[in-house]
Amino acid sequence: MGLIPEFFAHITGFEWDDGNSDKNWLRHRVNRAEAEQVFLNRPLLLALSPGRTQVEARYFALGHTDLNRHLTIVFAVRGALVRVISARPMSRRERRSYGQAQAAQADPKL
Image (cartoon, rainbow, N blue to C red; front, side, top):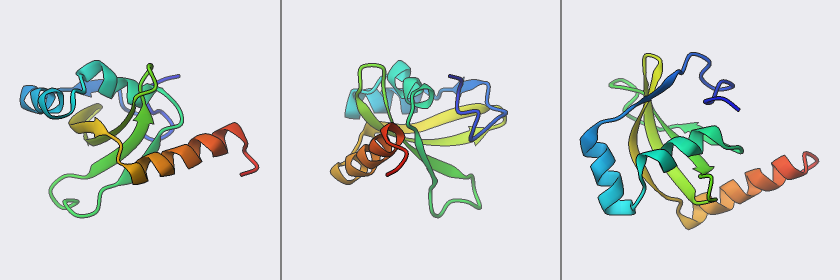
């Protein structure tokens, strides 16, 4: 499966800022590879972040890594690249929403 083509067909990869990457590791122990895996695994829940839309649209992604670590990613799209701003473990509420999406994917009748 490709990099979120059903949401952003023109995306070709990632752009990383060393400061954000270091912050994600130091605060949340999330490395770049884990953050990128979220975009490659399904289900992937996306939402536009309220506010900031006049400066730069920001999005939330709820997903999981290859080792099934559930993460929340805040990101922006810059040209053809995803720029990860923040990556952290999901909150309890986010895990509940994501669990519902996983159940719906497993049983489309839900």
